[in-house]
Image: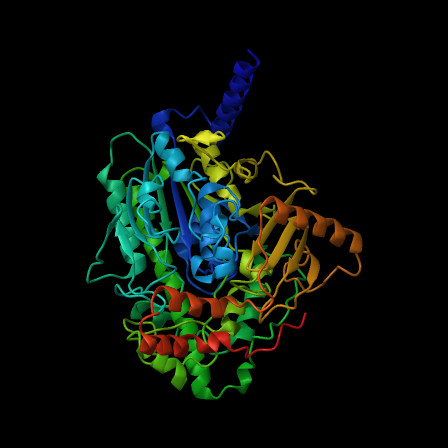
Length: 594
């Protein structure tokens, strides 16, 4: 009887939430909202116009006006762990994805929870929605496993076209790094050949529209997951978009970083008085000659173009939903899997770089930068600008690697054109989608197997205005990646960055007042530091986190991965691989001075 009573209370609570969201009446099964989950790849914190960017992103600005934008949202520091947490609500170490497989050292890979692929001990939000009567679609990057039972077609998605690797070319079907034999694309579980007129952002929206249209009018809601390749390397875009940004970045990365900070303050994205640190990886723009400056400026122009092209195609999906009458019943969630990528070489056009890229049939010529056959990536200076005013970038657990935009929008939502600085985390997305759709969280056993419990929390109380936060001052959220560590608790964060850019020590910041992590409080508030260190150690124990060797470098592990999996029998190709990646391995930069 008590159990029945409790189930009734749960049902009434969900009904009340749906009443608030709809504003007038309960949502019937036929009226359940569609969900469009859009994930950019390697997008920096201030890369959207609504977050302070000079990049033209009108489609996402419109969504921001129709919903709530989060300014204190954190994800993982690289792609696969973030994607696993996004789709399951479970910590990456519990799902088998503590790092991307290409960067897991052999001594860790021997352990089952360090496979780098999503285990069968978690259930995806797609599976839960599909079982609740939703159509479920995926078009884009997967990177959570390529074996038949790991592909998205076996993880709850009804229709799929998916890239299995960490990335690939945006113009044709070829790998972007020589650690891969080919660009692995799959459609509905089978190997897939891309069309000749392929450009990634356009193609992924074309397929999303095709999938939605295939079941239009049958009365069932849909969940569409669109994980873009933009703006992962190689950074590429159509010429018409590149032309719009030629000259925009001629002032260099420091000027851009400062202008974005000013605009972010004006918009309320970061508090007035926010400061920035200058990463040791940021070179002196004025020390470059005019030819070098022009080249670097164009690299960033292609980056801006790729962001705008993504936004344009998001707008196409929005217009399609308006045309078929589904726009007003659709909730959009937009974010990025991690912060900006800083692996563009400081001297991209060097002889070593050109020889290594030639092995992949890539050019670094200025005239064709960003076009088909061209390899492009922004360097650390512009990566820091993309994350302005935050410190660090992808692969590191400074705010620049973890804090990214999050927009939740749609006509069914009560709040419009709002900002929130409430703490939110990537594991909150699945619980939020379940709450928005009225779908139950999975029990301890689902589909005949034991399931890891979700640790995320629904953000609906923030969305509907019934609460100002879903995390209390004593609630702790931890994250670890390859020896880097972070823990969030209230307004505070402790952070440990290692490797070529880290300093191998724990620091304490108030990231609400100081999002740029400029004022280390560890000496002034040692009690808070020790409290949070204790919580972090508990997080490590609870999630069976394995240590990394003191000399571990993720760049070097990528070479070992390529040698072990692709080129063990071809010494010539391996030499080219080393030439391609050598600048990533050489410690060419002094450690960050904080």
